[in-house]
Image (cartoon, rainbow, N blue to C red; front, side):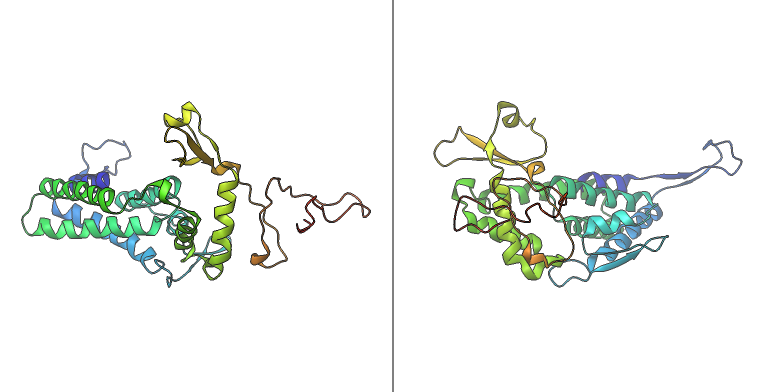
Length: 279
């Protein structure tokens, strides 16, 4: 959002001429407070779209495309991705939500709302006579102070985390989703799935060259030994006809979406463990 603030407050928009030459020589140039107000208004419009879907009591959005397909979701990145946003400032917010979804996987709605609110507050300061460069410098100073406070007072060592902390973190992410009512079941399932793909990190992973992996964690026995959790190794197979709470994790195996070639083939695969349930 730092780049977004700099872009909005310093943005100058030009419109091409209507002669069809594609040149900007005879175009209309707009700058100053009018352009800033337009950019902030567009950003607030995008924020208002996803604002009501934030939190555990947020509302779901029903999106209908041109061919009649219906999509119901409260995920900020998904909602903004389905919208046809043409305004350049509003488009930056859409890209911000998509980047948040790729890097973190959660908080897409929050970053859009925070960025739009910072733009609105900054625009109010500009109206009071404060230069945009001073406002941006203040935001950057506040960012450094916030990051410093979080690292000093709120960050916990990975060695101090146990399964309960991981389950609580998973519940927080699921609280505003459709499966929020079954968060106790799915949070444990998600934690077990991630722990099942744990592997020792290589030198390339330690240098930040690993792809598709969760952040490496230090083991309790040795600070030099680190592990990674490649999320791409988790295969999610969807099937219709049963309840969502009948989902289960296949530990030590791999699920394939296939049917029996003949009626005589078995419908379940047993295990050497007599206490294990057949799959």
